[in-house]
Length: 145
Picture (spheres, rainbow, N blue to C red):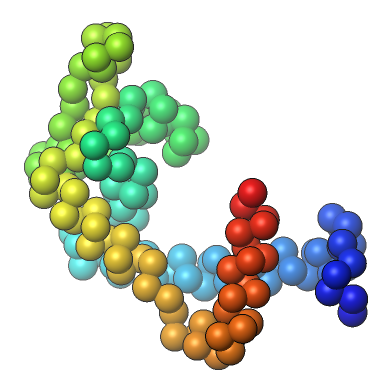
């Protein structure tokens, strides 16, 4: 196969590549529930902590939109995170009717631990040579541009 040729979406090669990426995603996704349980969080709460960056308040409505769920679901998730002292609701400085979420120091520390654990490469990545790993980084970076 000519690796410099562009593969059109829907071609057999692009379909196979996509199927393999989905398979890889789901294989790694299985690691989240045990990690969440270890941190005494639900997988959804882990996702919320991942989305709230330290020092960058996020409106609850934006969080609901990002999670593609109803605002009432976000309220329940936030209630549980807030009861653990991981997040706080605050009025938005731009519009006091809007509630924004901020991480507490405890929430920031737990988020750092969560991200460290989630972003540790799986052992299977070691099957690739260093040059293959670099090529994979270039390819994925290009796809995310």
